[in-house]
Length: 137
Image (cartoon, rainbow, N blue to C red; front, side):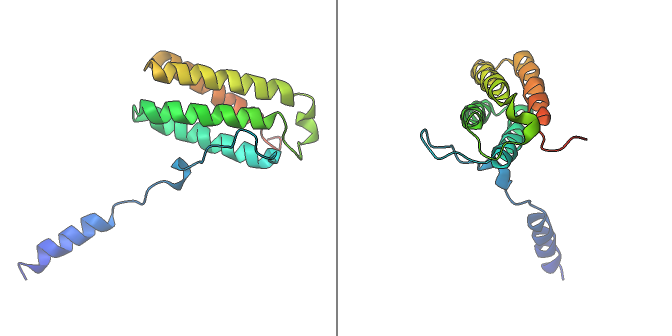
């Protein structure tokens, strides 16, 4: 009985370990790849914004910088997205340019480990991605 209790405790502790977050593995986009749909890019931007927030909270500056690069790639793809909702057709070039600029600012802030600037830019990015929603509400 004395041997079973530690084994059970160890098993319980190990079973509580979570699996790695699958969101963290957003692959980079090819430089000259085919266009993606607006919905695909929106989901990608949401995931990258969430990943950036998680990296920022953990002070994982290299991952934050890498995520900013992927977000900038996504913003570039956004400019030529397919199936763009009518409400975003006219503003898509501006949204894409703004998101790309913010992504570069985030990359620079992460490279410099500037907490205040990172926080400021992350807020802007999250608001911009929220503005990109498919539906009002």
